[in-house]
Structures are given as structure tokens and as C-alpha cells.
Amino acid sequence: MSPRSSHRARMVGAVHLVEIVATALVLVAVGQAIGGHLEGFVVNPGWYWAMGVGGVVAAAAAGVAMGMSGRHARAEESALHPRILDVLYRRSLSAPPAPDEGGRVVTLVGDNAERVSEYRQVFYPDMIAALATPVIVCLGILVGLDWLTGLVLLVMCPVIPALIAGFLRLFRKRSSESRRERARLTARYLDAISNLVLIRMLGAGQRVEDDLRRRGETNRGTIMKLLAGNQVVIIVIDGLFSLLFIVMSAGMAMTRWQNGHISATAAIIIVLLSVLLLEPLHQVSAFFYIGMGGIASKKAISRWFEEAPRAVSAGGDGPTTGDGSGAIRLRDVTVGYGDSDILHGIDLAIPRGSRIAIVGRSGAGKSTLLGVMTGTLHPRTGKVVVDGLDADIAGVGAIRGVSASVNQRTWLFAGTIADNLAVANPHATAEQMWQALKRADVADDVASMPRGLDSDVGEQGCLLSGGQAQRISLARAFLSGRKILLLDEPTSHVDIDSEQRIIDAISRISADTTVVMVTHRRRLLDLASKVYRVADGTLVPVCADEVTREDLERAGSEDRA
Ligand code: ATP
Ligand code: MG
Image (cartoon, rainbow, N blue to C red; front, side, top):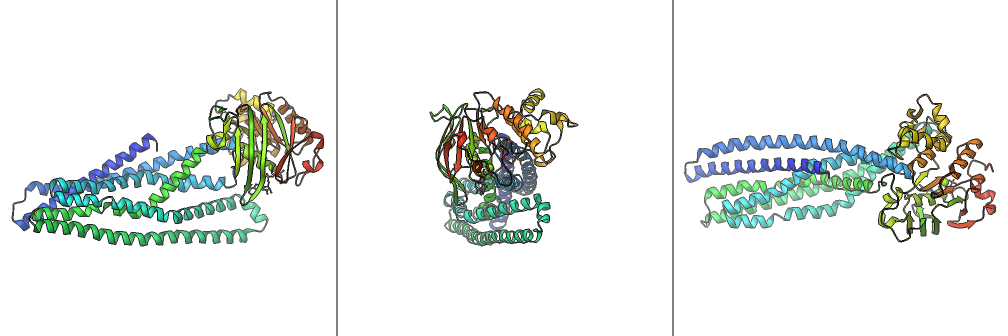
């Protein structure tokens, strides 16, 4: 929580406390009035005033707290959106999008941001005030009415938070299952919407619709299960504990009055005030809907921020391993998807400034290997050190921040060319952008567009040709100034002339920059000081002339060596 957001939550909490104190005042005044009639003493008119004024203040405070917390929640939600999207921009620079990234972002920006804001600004201040209420009331009873009753009730106070913590544990699994199911459904919807044309062309509309309906039903089922469980708990807690607290305080007050320790008026006030002791119980139901979802959303958002790449100019100032001389070091790395391992026991040391080529058949695991180096994929076992940063110590976010990559499936954002370049280096001047575009041999293409750097690239670069998008993403990598470049088939979408110019551009990269290239093109191999082949889940060094046509073969295309 930012200091501003904590301050807002504290303000709402303070207003809630005013409401509680005013309500307590009304209850004491009512007790005085009833006691006066029963015991036959003249009630001080001040109590009637207190009743009226307290009632108005309590109602006004409740209204103000509700209005304030709603407004603060919306403001917090709006402030979260750009921060979440900023991380998405920065991630895109150093890594290809993870398979579930689209659905994850939609859930973070929609569901998670809303829940966490509600949790922080509505539920949290309310909860703190509700938990403070019994303590304030018990202390009031202890000091002003009867020390023994106050003390006994005070001892009972921690029971409710303990109970809530217990139920939290009990329901955590079911609640996270429901959230996961919802996130899966979101990802499916997103996928279906973004591939609508393809789905129609393949005549797969009915199948997709059935699938969405089935998943929607599963989602509904998990939510209903969660709600049913919650309702049972709420009924039990409300019934049992409300009764227990009221009976206990009434019993204590009666006994103490009959034994002559307190007056009838004090006993009545204690019974009336015991209603306020139930305040935390009212939070139990809100806890299941807003509280648990809010806590989980908070964790999801924190995880997203933790995974954010470091600032663009980052390079090697994080925790080191003493292995600082190499650019990339993989030790006994095993990585895969789902249950299957794609690569196992990979050992690799890439010295700084070297040019490495990686070859292998389509599907062998070359992009997977680059995914490990960029920090997108977490190996199941083994150690990954990039630019002196140990992924286990520095975190994948830091690892993502030290390299720049050009992905196999080029990834540009909706926005202008300048926007896309600026994510690599927010301070870059137009001159520097043109330089980078020139180095990637795409400056002429951009110059011929009517709006130059301000030309729109469309969603995921759809207004550009594949080759243009690829070269712009290469320019972006150049502009980042990072000293490790990971290029996944940097010439896969360009013609032979452009290929040669990109090869020239790569060959001009300064000697202190490490370049790892996955390629199916023999021409790029000539740039490499060392070539590795990925085959059968392992990585073996080969001489450039040992690279076979099979190594360079790619699904659906031919090597143009
Ligand atoms: P290509 O030359 O065609 O790009 P590659 O060597 O880069 O192939 P990878 O993309 O690393 O191959 O894929 C290796 C294997 O992992 C393939 O069998 C592929 O189907 C599988 N794979 C890749 N990405 C995923 C994913 N996100 N989820 C599940 N399996 C995946
Ligand atoms: Mg690949």
C-alpha cells in the first residue's frame, strides 16, 4: 500500500471509530433513560440530548465512511491499472509473452485490481474498526460500569479474530480453486475473442462455444460450492456466537446486579452495549467475499510487480555469485512444460562478448532454452546466472532486466513505432531511435511511412509486414543498450537482401555485447564463434561445418543457405 492509500484507509477507519463511539453513546443514553424509569431517578436531560446528537453523528459518520471508502477504492483501482500495464510493457522488452499472459493481465487489471482496492479501502478499515470496537466497549464497561464483566468480556474478544483466521485456513483451498477457475475462463474468453476470425474460418464456432459453456458451468459450480460453504459458516457463527456473547453479557450483568455489585441501570447499559461486541461477527460474511478475494488478489498483484524487469539501463549491480566473468551460465538445468521435460541437464557457459549460435530441428527446444536465459521460463532444477545475477537470489524479474531479446514471434504493442522503441529506453531521443532503426535496416521503411516514428503499428504489429515488425524489434533491442542480446531467429521473416543487412548489423554489434542467436539460416552461423546443437533434450557443441541440413530445417520453410 502506498503512503497515500494507507492514509486514506486510516481516515476511513477513524470515521468508523467516530460512528462506533457515537453509537455507544446512544446505547448508554438509552440505558440511562430505561434505568431512570425502572429505578425511579430523574434522568439528566443531557442524556436525551446525547441520544439525539449521538444518533445523528453515528448515521452521518456511517454515510461519510461509505462514500469515502467507495471513492478511495475507485481511485486506488485507477492508479493500479497503469502500474500493472507498465510492468507488461517492460516485460515485453526482455521476453516473449508467457502462454497465459493475456488472461493473466486481464484478470489483474479487472478482477484483481477491483478486489484489492475494495479490500484495502472498504473492507480493511471497516475490519480494523470492527475489531477495535469490542476492545473499546469492554474497556468502557471495565472502567465505567463493572470491572469484572468488562474483564471477562475483554478476555473473550480474541475469540472472534482467532475464529476468522481458522476459517480463512479452512476455506483457502476452495477459494483459490474458484479464483483459478475464473482466471482460466477469462483466458479462454480472451483467446476465443482474439481468434474469432480463425475460429469461424475453421468452422470451430460450435466447439469453442461448447467448451466455453462447459468451463462457465465449472466456474459457476466452484463459486456456488464456495458460497454454500460460506453461508453455512455464517449461519453457524452468527447464530452461535451472537447468542453466546449476548447471553454471557446479560448473564454477567444480571448476576452482578442481583449480588448488589452494580445498579440496574448499569446492568441494562451492559446488555445494550453487548450488541456492539458482535460488530466483528458482521465482518465474517464480508470476509469471505471481499477479504479472502482481496488478500489473494493482493498476492497476485504483488507477484506481478515482483516479476517486473528492472530499469532498462540495468546491468550487473544486483546480487552476484562470484561468477561475474561470464555473460550466461546454466548449470544442470532441466526445463519443460506441464509434465514433460524438453531439456534436461543443460550445462552452458557463455563468455562475455561472444557470439553463440544455437541450431536444432524444429521443436527441439531452442526457444525454450532462450526462455530460460531471458528469465521467462523457470527451470525445474539447476542454476541460472545471467550477467552475474543468480536467478534464485535476484529473482526472475532481475534476470529479465539484463538482456534484450528479439522473439521468434515478434511482439510489438499497439501504439506508434516511437512508443514501441521507447519501452526499451524511455529517454531515447528521436535521433537515437533513427540510429537504432538504421542499424536494424528498417529506417527507410519507417521514413517512407506518412507519420514516420509516429506511425501506428496496429495490435501486435499487424499493420506492418512480418519482416518490418521483426526489424523494429531488433532496433528496440539495439536501443536498449543492454549487453546481452538474445535473438530467436532474427532473420526468419526477411528477404535475402534484408537478411544480409541484418547480418551486417549484428556483425557490427560492439565486442563487449554478448549475442546468442537461434537460427535456421546458415549465413548467420558465420557470425558465431561457437555453435551448439539442441537435440534429444541436450545441448552439444558442434563445428559450423558439422551443422547439417536437418539442424537447419524448419517446419513449413526451407533453409535458404
Ligand atoms: P522452432 O525451431 O520450430 O522454433 P524450437 O526448437 O524453438 O522450435 P520450442 O519452441 O523450444 O522449439 O519447443 C520445444 C517443445 O516444447 C516443442 O515440442 C513444443 O511443442 C513444446 N512447447 C513449446 N512451448 C510450449 C508451451 N508454451 N507449452 C507447452 N509446450 C510447449
Ligand atoms: Mg523456436
